[in-house]
Length: 503
Figure 1 (cartoon, rainbow, N blue to C red):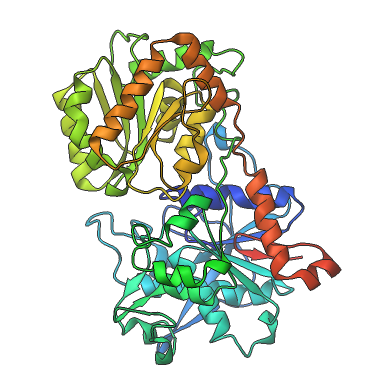
Figure 2: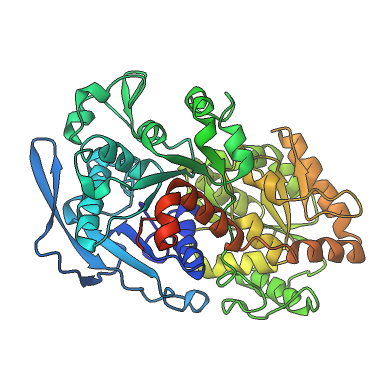
Protein backbone atom coordinates (compact mmCIF):
# COMPACT_ATOMS: atom_id res chain seq x y z
CA UNK A 1 0.00 0.00 0.00
CA UNK A 2 1.09 3.55 -0.65
CA UNK A 3 -0.10 7.15 -0.29
CA UNK A 4 0.06 7.78 -4.07
CA UNK A 5 0.45 5.94 -7.33
CA UNK A 6 0.26 6.73 -11.04
CA UNK A 7 -2.18 7.14 -12.76
CA UNK A 8 -4.46 7.75 -9.76
CA UNK A 9 -2.38 10.27 -7.83
CA UNK A 10 1.14 11.67 -7.87
CA UNK A 11 3.32 14.34 -6.29
CA UNK A 12 6.71 12.88 -7.22
CA UNK A 13 8.79 9.81 -7.92
CA UNK A 14 6.96 7.72 -5.31
CA UNK A 15 3.84 7.85 -7.49
CA UNK A 16 5.82 6.66 -10.52
CA UNK A 17 7.30 3.74 -8.57
CA UNK A 18 3.95 2.58 -7.22
CA UNK A 19 2.51 2.85 -10.72
CA UNK A 20 5.26 0.79 -12.38
CA UNK A 21 6.54 -1.77 -9.87
CA UNK A 22 3.26 -3.75 -9.60
CA UNK A 23 3.20 -4.29 -13.38
CA UNK A 24 6.79 -5.54 -13.29
CA UNK A 25 5.97 -7.91 -10.43
CA UNK A 26 2.90 -9.17 -12.27
CA UNK A 27 5.09 -9.87 -15.30
CA UNK A 28 6.99 -12.30 -13.06
CA UNK A 29 3.76 -14.13 -12.32
CA UNK A 30 3.01 -12.52 -8.95
CA UNK A 31 -0.50 -11.46 -7.96
CA UNK A 32 -0.54 -7.85 -6.82
CA UNK A 33 -3.20 -5.78 -5.09
CA UNK A 34 -2.48 -2.07 -4.69
CA UNK A 35 -4.30 0.01 -2.08
CA UNK A 36 -4.31 3.81 -2.36
CA UNK A 37 -6.39 6.69 -1.00
CA UNK A 38 -9.08 8.09 -3.27
CA UNK A 39 -8.17 11.77 -3.35
CA UNK A 40 -10.21 14.57 -4.89
CA UNK A 41 -8.00 14.31 -8.00
CA UNK A 42 -8.67 10.57 -8.31
CA UNK A 43 -11.63 9.59 -10.52
CA UNK A 44 -14.18 7.41 -8.71
CA UNK A 45 -14.12 3.70 -9.35
CA UNK A 46 -16.66 0.90 -9.06
CA UNK A 47 -17.78 0.25 -5.51
CA UNK A 48 -16.52 -2.99 -3.98
CA UNK A 49 -19.13 -4.89 -1.98
CA UNK A 50 -17.61 -5.28 1.47
CA UNK A 51 -20.94 -6.06 3.10
CA UNK A 52 -20.74 -2.77 4.95
CA UNK A 53 -18.35 0.13 5.19
CA UNK A 54 -14.86 -0.49 6.51
CA UNK A 55 -14.52 0.70 10.10
CA UNK A 56 -11.42 2.50 11.36
CA UNK A 57 -11.12 2.72 15.17
CA UNK A 58 -9.30 5.99 15.79
CA UNK A 59 -8.87 7.35 19.29
CA UNK A 60 -12.12 7.32 21.22
CA UNK A 61 -14.32 7.00 18.12
CA UNK A 62 -14.70 5.42 14.72
CA UNK A 63 -14.34 6.58 11.11
CA UNK A 64 -15.78 4.82 8.10
CA UNK A 65 -14.65 4.30 4.50
CA UNK A 66 -15.90 2.54 1.42
CA UNK A 67 -13.63 0.67 -0.99
CA UNK A 68 -13.66 1.25 -4.74
CA UNK A 69 -12.07 -0.75 -7.53
CA UNK A 70 -9.58 1.61 -9.16
CA UNK A 71 -10.61 2.70 -12.64
CA UNK A 72 -7.91 3.92 -15.00
CA UNK A 73 -8.57 7.62 -15.63
CA UNK A 74 -8.26 9.21 -19.04
CA UNK A 75 -4.57 8.82 -19.83
CA UNK A 76 -2.16 10.47 -22.19
CA UNK A 77 -1.26 8.33 -25.19
CA UNK A 78 2.11 7.54 -23.62
CA UNK A 79 0.32 5.93 -20.67
CA UNK A 80 -2.41 4.02 -22.48
CA UNK A 81 -3.13 0.43 -21.55
CA UNK A 82 -4.65 -1.30 -18.60
CA UNK A 83 -2.77 -2.95 -15.80
CA UNK A 84 -1.78 -6.52 -16.69
CA UNK A 85 -3.53 -9.55 -15.21
CA UNK A 86 -2.48 -10.00 -11.61
CA UNK A 87 -2.68 -6.29 -10.71
CA UNK A 88 -5.74 -4.83 -9.01
CA UNK A 89 -6.00 -1.35 -7.53
CA UNK A 90 -8.34 -0.51 -4.66
CA UNK A 91 -9.15 3.00 -3.46
CA UNK A 92 -9.99 3.88 0.13
CA UNK A 93 -12.80 6.41 -0.18
CA UNK A 94 -13.07 8.51 2.96
CA UNK A 95 -14.07 12.07 2.00
CA UNK A 96 -13.43 13.36 5.52
CA UNK A 97 -9.74 12.52 5.10
CA UNK A 98 -9.01 12.62 1.37
CA UNK A 99 -11.47 14.91 -0.41
CA UNK A 100 -9.15 17.91 -0.20
CA UNK A 101 -7.29 20.30 -2.46
CA UNK A 102 -3.95 18.57 -2.08
CA UNK A 103 -2.58 15.18 -1.12
CA UNK A 104 -0.46 16.06 1.89
CA UNK A 105 -0.55 19.85 2.00
CA UNK A 106 -3.15 22.57 1.62
CA UNK A 107 -2.50 24.06 -1.83
CA UNK A 108 -3.71 27.47 -0.68
CA UNK A 109 -1.20 27.77 2.18
CA UNK A 110 1.50 25.22 1.32
CA UNK A 111 1.25 23.88 4.90
CA UNK A 112 0.88 20.22 5.84
CA UNK A 113 -2.62 19.22 6.86
CA UNK A 114 -2.53 19.21 10.68
CA UNK A 115 -4.47 15.93 10.87
CA UNK A 116 -2.14 13.98 8.55
CA UNK A 117 -1.51 11.49 11.34
CA UNK A 118 -5.24 10.70 11.48
CA UNK A 119 -5.61 10.62 7.70
CA UNK A 120 -2.88 8.06 7.11
CA UNK A 121 -3.59 6.08 10.25
CA UNK A 122 -7.09 5.79 8.80
CA UNK A 123 -5.68 4.63 5.47
CA UNK A 124 -3.60 1.96 7.20
CA UNK A 125 -6.48 0.65 9.32
CA UNK A 126 -8.94 0.70 6.42
CA UNK A 127 -6.49 -1.26 4.27
CA UNK A 128 -5.92 -3.89 6.95
CA UNK A 129 -9.65 -4.32 7.56
CA UNK A 130 -10.32 -4.59 3.84
CA UNK A 131 -7.55 -7.16 3.38
CA UNK A 132 -9.36 -9.42 5.84
CA UNK A 133 -12.38 -9.40 3.51
CA UNK A 134 -10.42 -10.03 0.33
CA UNK A 135 -9.72 -13.66 0.98
CA UNK A 136 -6.57 -15.59 1.93
CA UNK A 137 -4.11 -13.82 4.22
CA UNK A 138 -1.39 -11.87 2.43
CA UNK A 139 2.13 -13.22 2.60
CA UNK A 140 3.70 -9.79 2.12
CA UNK A 141 2.40 -6.30 2.71
CA UNK A 142 4.75 -3.79 1.08
CA UNK A 143 4.43 -0.27 2.48
CA UNK A 144 5.90 2.97 1.15
CA UNK A 145 7.09 5.98 3.17
CA UNK A 146 5.91 7.43 6.47
CA UNK A 147 2.26 7.63 5.43
CA UNK A 148 1.98 3.82 5.58
CA UNK A 149 4.57 3.22 8.31
CA UNK A 150 1.85 2.46 10.85
CA UNK A 151 0.92 -0.81 9.12
CA UNK A 152 3.75 -2.84 10.71
CA UNK A 153 3.13 -1.08 14.02
CA UNK A 154 -0.56 -1.98 14.00
CA UNK A 155 0.18 -5.56 12.95
CA UNK A 156 2.70 -6.11 15.74
CA UNK A 157 0.58 -4.41 18.40
CA UNK A 158 -3.15 -3.92 17.71
CA UNK A 159 -3.55 -6.98 15.44
CA UNK A 160 -1.20 -9.27 17.33
CA UNK A 161 -3.99 -11.58 18.58
CA UNK A 162 -5.51 -11.80 15.06
CA UNK A 163 -4.44 -15.14 13.57
CA UNK A 164 -5.43 -13.97 10.08
CA UNK A 165 -2.14 -12.05 9.87
CA UNK A 166 -0.05 -14.67 11.70
CA UNK A 167 2.19 -15.42 8.69
CA UNK A 168 2.10 -11.95 7.12
CA UNK A 169 5.41 -10.11 6.76
CA UNK A 170 5.92 -6.40 6.08
CA UNK A 171 8.46 -4.80 3.75
CA UNK A 172 8.86 -1.07 4.36
CA UNK A 173 10.46 1.14 1.70
CA UNK A 174 11.97 4.54 2.50
CA UNK A 175 11.76 6.79 -0.55
CA UNK A 176 13.00 9.96 1.14
CA UNK A 177 14.23 9.91 4.72
CA UNK A 178 13.72 13.65 5.09
CA UNK A 179 9.95 13.18 5.32
CA UNK A 180 9.24 11.36 8.57
CA UNK A 181 5.71 12.05 9.78
CA UNK A 182 6.52 14.02 12.92
CA UNK A 183 3.69 14.80 15.38
CA UNK A 184 3.14 15.86 19.01
CA UNK A 185 2.88 13.21 21.76
CA UNK A 186 -0.92 13.48 21.89
CA UNK A 187 -1.08 12.00 18.37
CA UNK A 188 -0.32 8.54 19.75
CA UNK A 189 -3.67 8.06 21.48
CA UNK A 190 -5.49 9.73 18.57
CA UNK A 191 -4.26 6.99 16.23
CA UNK A 192 -5.21 4.18 18.62
CA UNK A 193 -1.75 3.29 19.89
CA UNK A 194 -0.81 2.63 23.48
CA UNK A 195 1.30 5.18 25.37
CA UNK A 196 3.85 2.42 26.03
CA UNK A 197 5.06 2.96 22.43
CA UNK A 198 6.21 6.45 23.35
CA UNK A 199 9.80 5.46 24.09
CA UNK A 200 13.13 5.61 22.29
CA UNK A 201 12.89 1.97 21.19
CA UNK A 202 9.57 2.54 19.43
CA UNK A 203 7.96 5.75 18.10
CA UNK A 204 9.38 8.46 20.35
CA UNK A 205 11.93 10.80 18.82
CA UNK A 206 13.05 13.87 20.79
CA UNK A 207 9.72 13.97 22.65
CA UNK A 208 7.73 13.72 19.39
CA UNK A 209 5.91 10.86 17.67
CA UNK A 210 7.85 9.81 14.57
CA UNK A 211 5.83 7.51 12.30
CA UNK A 212 8.72 6.71 9.95
CA UNK A 213 10.71 5.49 12.92
CA UNK A 214 7.83 3.15 13.76
CA UNK A 215 8.01 1.65 10.29
CA UNK A 216 11.75 1.12 10.61
CA UNK A 217 11.47 -0.51 14.02
CA UNK A 218 8.50 -2.80 13.38
CA UNK A 219 8.84 -3.86 9.72
CA UNK A 220 10.32 -7.27 8.91
CA UNK A 221 12.53 -5.91 6.11
CA UNK A 222 13.62 -2.43 5.07
CA UNK A 223 14.50 -1.17 1.63
CA UNK A 224 15.38 2.13 0.10
CA UNK A 225 15.57 3.18 -3.51
CA UNK A 226 19.27 2.89 -4.38
CA UNK A 227 22.32 1.10 -2.95
CA UNK A 228 24.24 4.34 -2.42
CA UNK A 229 21.34 5.99 -0.58
CA UNK A 230 21.10 2.92 1.67
CA UNK A 231 24.68 3.59 2.72
CA UNK A 232 24.30 7.37 2.88
CA UNK A 233 21.34 7.36 5.29
CA UNK A 234 23.50 5.57 7.83
CA UNK A 235 25.73 8.65 8.07
CA UNK A 236 25.24 11.91 9.94
CA UNK A 237 25.25 13.90 6.67
CA UNK A 238 22.24 12.12 5.18
CA UNK A 239 20.62 10.31 8.12
CA UNK A 240 18.39 13.22 9.20
CA UNK A 241 18.82 12.19 12.83
CA UNK A 242 17.92 8.53 12.27
CA UNK A 243 21.37 7.34 11.21
CA UNK A 244 21.96 5.54 14.53
CA UNK A 245 18.70 3.64 14.24
CA UNK A 246 19.47 2.70 10.63
CA UNK A 247 22.98 1.56 11.55
CA UNK A 248 21.42 -0.64 14.23
CA UNK A 249 19.07 -2.13 11.64
CA UNK A 250 21.59 -2.32 8.79
CA UNK A 251 21.15 -6.08 8.57
CA UNK A 252 17.50 -5.59 7.56
CA UNK A 253 18.18 -2.69 5.17
CA UNK A 254 18.69 -3.18 1.45
CA UNK A 255 19.08 -0.68 -1.37
CA UNK A 256 17.17 -1.64 -4.53
CA UNK A 257 17.51 0.81 -7.37
CA UNK A 258 14.25 2.07 -8.84
CA UNK A 259 13.51 1.42 -12.50
CA UNK A 260 12.33 3.54 -15.40
CA UNK A 261 9.00 2.91 -17.10
CA UNK A 262 10.07 2.54 -20.72
CA UNK A 263 6.48 2.02 -21.83
CA UNK A 264 5.95 5.71 -21.11
CA UNK A 265 9.51 6.98 -21.55
CA UNK A 266 11.11 5.85 -24.82
CA UNK A 267 11.92 8.23 -27.71
CA UNK A 268 11.34 5.44 -30.22
CA UNK A 269 7.65 5.18 -29.29
CA UNK A 270 6.76 8.28 -27.22
CA UNK A 271 3.52 9.64 -28.69
CA UNK A 272 4.01 12.97 -26.95
CA UNK A 273 6.96 13.77 -29.24
CA UNK A 274 6.78 15.40 -32.69
CA UNK A 275 9.39 12.93 -34.00
CA UNK A 276 10.85 9.61 -32.88
CA UNK A 277 14.48 8.52 -32.83
CA UNK A 278 16.78 5.68 -31.82
CA UNK A 279 20.51 5.29 -31.11
CA UNK A 280 20.93 4.23 -34.76
CA UNK A 281 19.01 7.21 -36.15
CA UNK A 282 19.09 10.43 -34.14
CA UNK A 283 17.52 12.74 -36.73
CA UNK A 284 14.25 12.92 -34.80
CA UNK A 285 16.03 14.46 -31.81
CA UNK A 286 16.81 17.57 -33.87
CA UNK A 287 13.12 17.95 -34.65
CA UNK A 288 12.29 17.60 -30.96
CA UNK A 289 14.87 20.28 -30.12
CA UNK A 290 13.37 22.66 -32.66
CA UNK A 291 9.84 21.95 -31.40
CA UNK A 292 10.89 22.52 -27.78
CA UNK A 293 12.47 25.90 -28.46
CA UNK A 294 9.51 27.05 -30.55
CA UNK A 295 7.10 25.95 -27.81
CA UNK A 296 9.12 27.89 -25.24
CA UNK A 297 8.85 31.06 -27.31
CA UNK A 298 12.11 31.16 -29.28
CA UNK A 299 11.12 32.62 -32.66
CA UNK A 300 14.26 31.55 -34.53
CA UNK A 301 15.87 28.56 -32.76
CA UNK A 302 19.62 28.17 -33.12
CA UNK A 303 19.98 24.40 -33.19
CA UNK A 304 23.76 24.48 -32.86
CA UNK A 305 23.38 26.11 -29.44
CA UNK A 306 23.19 23.53 -26.60
CA UNK A 307 19.95 23.25 -24.64
CA UNK A 308 20.23 22.53 -20.91
CA UNK A 309 17.02 21.09 -19.45
CA UNK A 310 15.54 20.89 -15.95
CA UNK A 311 12.33 19.10 -15.00
CA UNK A 312 11.97 19.03 -11.24
CA UNK A 313 10.14 19.71 -8.06
CA UNK A 314 11.44 23.08 -6.90
CA UNK A 315 13.04 22.33 -3.57
CA UNK A 316 16.31 23.01 -1.78
CA UNK A 317 17.04 19.28 -1.98
CA UNK A 318 17.35 19.59 -5.76
CA UNK A 319 20.38 21.89 -5.63
CA UNK A 320 18.77 25.06 -6.90
CA UNK A 321 20.72 27.13 -4.40
CA UNK A 322 23.82 26.10 -6.42
CA UNK A 323 22.08 27.11 -9.62
CA UNK A 324 21.34 30.52 -8.10
CA UNK A 325 25.06 30.91 -7.36
CA UNK A 326 26.05 30.34 -10.99
CA UNK A 327 23.01 31.79 -12.79
CA UNK A 328 24.81 34.87 -14.09
CA UNK A 329 27.80 32.80 -15.19
CA UNK A 330 25.41 30.58 -17.17
CA UNK A 331 23.76 33.66 -18.66
CA UNK A 332 27.13 34.61 -20.15
CA UNK A 333 27.36 31.30 -22.03
CA UNK A 334 25.97 30.59 -25.48
CA UNK A 335 23.24 28.23 -24.26
CA UNK A 336 19.51 27.85 -23.75
CA UNK A 337 18.25 26.82 -20.30
CA UNK A 338 14.75 25.30 -20.27
CA UNK A 339 13.13 24.87 -16.85
CA UNK A 340 9.84 23.18 -15.89
CA UNK A 341 8.53 22.58 -12.39
CA UNK A 342 6.67 23.76 -9.33
CA UNK A 343 7.39 23.75 -5.62
CA UNK A 344 8.85 26.09 -3.03
CA UNK A 345 7.76 29.65 -3.64
CA UNK A 346 11.31 31.01 -3.34
CA UNK A 347 12.46 28.88 -6.26
CA UNK A 348 9.36 29.49 -8.33
CA UNK A 349 10.07 33.20 -7.95
CA UNK A 350 13.78 32.70 -8.64
CA UNK A 351 13.18 30.94 -11.93
CA UNK A 352 10.48 33.42 -12.89
CA UNK A 353 12.91 36.31 -12.32
CA UNK A 354 15.59 34.46 -14.27
CA UNK A 355 13.29 34.03 -17.24
CA UNK A 356 12.25 37.67 -17.24
CA UNK A 357 15.83 38.92 -16.86
CA UNK A 358 17.20 36.77 -19.69
CA UNK A 359 14.34 36.25 -22.16
CA UNK A 360 15.15 34.08 -25.13
CA UNK A 361 17.94 32.37 -23.19
CA UNK A 362 16.39 31.19 -19.92
CA UNK A 363 13.04 29.65 -20.84
CA UNK A 364 10.90 28.94 -17.78
CA UNK A 365 7.47 27.45 -17.15
CA UNK A 366 6.31 27.19 -13.56
CA UNK A 367 3.74 24.41 -13.85
CA UNK A 368 3.16 20.67 -13.94
CA UNK A 369 3.03 19.68 -17.62
CA UNK A 370 3.63 16.02 -18.46
CA UNK A 371 3.70 16.55 -22.23
CA UNK A 372 6.25 19.34 -21.92
CA UNK A 373 8.35 17.20 -19.57
CA UNK A 374 8.63 14.57 -22.33
CA UNK A 375 9.54 17.23 -24.89
CA UNK A 376 12.24 18.68 -22.60
CA UNK A 377 13.78 15.24 -22.16
CA UNK A 378 13.82 14.73 -25.92
CA UNK A 379 14.69 18.25 -27.04
CA UNK A 380 17.48 19.03 -24.57
CA UNK A 381 21.13 18.19 -25.13
CA UNK A 382 22.10 18.24 -21.44
CA UNK A 383 19.99 17.55 -18.35
CA UNK A 384 20.88 19.17 -15.00
CA UNK A 385 20.37 17.44 -11.63
CA UNK A 386 22.68 19.16 -9.10
CA UNK A 387 20.93 17.62 -6.10
CA UNK A 388 22.06 18.11 -2.52
CA UNK A 389 20.89 14.52 -2.06
CA UNK A 390 18.84 12.24 -4.32
CA UNK A 391 17.57 8.91 -2.97
CA UNK A 392 17.21 7.56 -6.50
CA UNK A 393 15.99 9.96 -9.15
CA UNK A 394 14.18 9.00 -12.34
CA UNK A 395 14.80 11.90 -14.68
CA UNK A 396 18.45 10.99 -15.14
CA UNK A 397 17.30 7.53 -16.31
CA UNK A 398 14.81 9.09 -18.70
CA UNK A 399 17.54 11.43 -19.95
CA UNK A 400 19.88 8.56 -20.73
CA UNK A 401 17.21 6.82 -22.80
CA UNK A 402 16.47 10.08 -24.66
CA UNK A 403 20.11 10.75 -25.49
CA UNK A 404 20.15 13.80 -23.23
CA UNK A 405 23.46 13.76 -21.38
CA UNK A 406 23.08 14.20 -17.58
CA UNK A 407 25.16 16.53 -15.45
CA UNK A 408 24.61 15.36 -11.87
CA UNK A 409 25.99 15.55 -8.38
CA UNK A 410 27.43 12.18 -7.36
CA UNK A 411 24.95 11.32 -4.62
CA UNK A 412 22.41 8.55 -4.04
CA UNK A 413 20.87 7.06 -7.16
CA UNK A 414 22.52 9.68 -9.37
CA UNK A 415 25.90 8.22 -8.49
CA UNK A 416 24.59 4.68 -9.04
CA UNK A 417 23.15 5.33 -12.50
CA UNK A 418 25.55 7.77 -14.19
CA UNK A 419 29.02 6.72 -15.30
CA UNK A 420 31.28 9.76 -15.41
CA UNK A 421 32.72 10.41 -18.86
CA UNK A 422 36.50 9.96 -18.82
CA UNK A 423 37.27 10.95 -22.39
CA UNK A 424 36.60 7.47 -23.75
CA UNK A 425 33.64 5.89 -21.98
CA UNK A 426 30.82 7.06 -19.74
CA UNK A 427 27.26 8.35 -19.91
CA UNK A 428 27.39 11.76 -18.26
CA UNK A 429 29.27 14.25 -16.10
CA UNK A 430 29.44 14.14 -12.31
CA UNK A 431 30.65 16.53 -9.64
CA UNK A 432 31.24 15.75 -5.99
CA UNK A 433 31.63 18.90 -3.89
CA UNK A 434 28.35 20.65 -3.19
CA UNK A 435 29.43 24.03 -4.52
CA UNK A 436 28.43 26.30 -7.37
CA UNK A 437 31.99 26.18 -8.68
CA UNK A 438 31.90 22.37 -8.92
CA UNK A 439 28.57 22.49 -10.75
CA UNK A 440 29.85 25.12 -13.18
CA UNK A 441 32.99 23.07 -13.83
CA UNK A 442 30.92 19.97 -14.68
CA UNK A 443 28.70 21.98 -17.01
CA UNK A 444 31.82 23.40 -18.66
CA UNK A 445 33.18 19.91 -19.30
CA UNK A 446 29.87 18.85 -20.84
CA UNK A 447 29.78 21.93 -23.08
CA UNK A 448 33.34 21.31 -24.21
CA UNK A 449 32.44 17.73 -25.20
CA UNK A 450 29.35 19.03 -27.01
CA UNK A 451 31.64 20.98 -29.37
CA UNK A 452 32.86 17.65 -30.83
CA UNK A 453 29.89 15.99 -32.58
CA UNK A 454 31.37 12.50 -32.94
CA UNK A 455 32.42 12.44 -29.30
CA UNK A 456 29.03 13.75 -28.16
CA UNK A 457 27.19 11.16 -30.23
CA UNK A 458 29.23 8.44 -28.54
CA UNK A 459 28.24 9.71 -25.07
CA UNK A 460 24.61 9.89 -26.14
CA UNK A 461 24.67 6.35 -27.52
CA UNK A 462 26.35 5.03 -24.36
CA UNK A 463 23.42 6.33 -22.33
CA UNK A 464 20.69 5.28 -24.72
CA UNK A 465 21.88 1.67 -24.63
CA UNK A 466 21.71 1.46 -20.82
CA UNK A 467 18.88 -0.63 -19.40
CA UNK A 468 17.28 0.69 -16.23
CA UNK A 469 13.93 -1.02 -16.77
CA UNK A 470 11.91 -2.40 -13.87
CA UNK A 471 12.69 -6.05 -14.68
CA UNK A 472 15.82 -6.27 -12.52
CA UNK A 473 14.50 -4.43 -9.42
CA UNK A 474 11.26 -6.43 -9.65
CA UNK A 475 13.29 -9.65 -9.48
CA UNK A 476 15.20 -8.27 -6.48
CA UNK A 477 11.95 -7.46 -4.67
CA UNK A 478 10.54 -10.89 -5.51
CA UNK A 479 13.67 -12.51 -4.06
CA UNK A 480 13.30 -10.43 -0.91
CA UNK A 481 9.66 -11.44 -0.54
CA UNK A 482 10.57 -15.11 -0.93
CA UNK A 483 13.30 -14.83 1.69
CA UNK A 484 10.73 -13.67 4.24
CA UNK A 485 8.27 -16.53 3.70
CA UNK A 486 10.34 -19.48 2.38
CA UNK A 487 8.18 -22.27 3.78
CA UNK A 488 4.90 -21.02 2.31
CA UNK A 489 6.50 -20.10 -1.00
CA UNK A 490 7.80 -23.64 -1.37
CA UNK A 491 4.24 -24.92 -1.03
CA UNK A 492 2.21 -22.43 -2.99
CA UNK A 493 4.45 -20.25 -5.14
CA UNK A 494 5.57 -16.66 -4.66
CA UNK A 495 3.33 -13.74 -3.91
CA UNK A 496 4.20 -10.11 -3.42
CA UNK A 497 2.85 -6.64 -3.80
CA UNK A 498 3.32 -2.96 -3.46
CA UNK A 499 0.30 -3.18 -1.25
CA UNK A 500 -1.29 -6.57 -0.51
CA UNK A 501 0.21 -9.69 -2.11
CA UNK A 502 -2.00 -12.72 -2.46
CA UNK A 503 -1.42 -16.24 -3.85
